[in-house]
Image 1: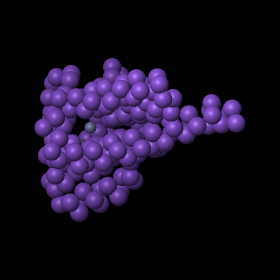
Image 2 (image 1 turned 120 degrees about the vertical axis):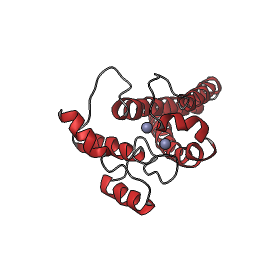
Image 3 (image 1 turned 45 degrees about the vertical axis):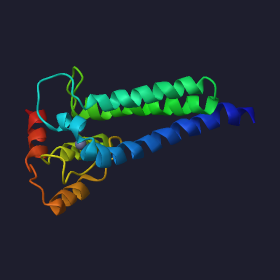
Image 4 (image 1 turned 135 degrees about the horizontal axis):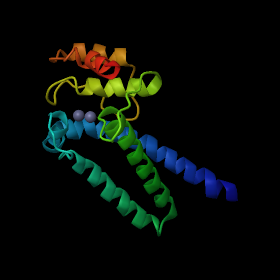
Length: 174
Ligand SMILES: [Zn+2]
Ligand SMILES: [Zn+2]
């Protein structure tokens, strides 16, 4: 019983929260950030030279919320592990999206095989459409197979930058 309380339940809370956060992040990316929340998110879809984007405020909002959960969690222990799960998701989001895809860290590494390559290319496809309409691939940690996303993009009939992926391949081999 002790093992269940002290390990299995926390582990289930953390993993469950990470999975829920990926679903919630993808949902809010599609329906809020590309909807009424586009005002902050637009900065992430437009080229710029600044280190920070208005879009980073979304990460701040999630951070403040997780901090609040830690405070509540100091009194209600299951909430503490939910806060840990949110924080783990925050790190995953940063590594996959800000790091791997957008290279906001001081080294360049483009994944060339396996699942990380799929996540990378899927998010490049998210940025292959100009503006907020007709985009695909709203998740950050889970990505659909790339060929399915390409098909969806064509179905959306948006002005697709067909060179987007090719250019990336050339950039990394050059
Ligand atoms: Zn977006
Ligand atoms: Zn992005």
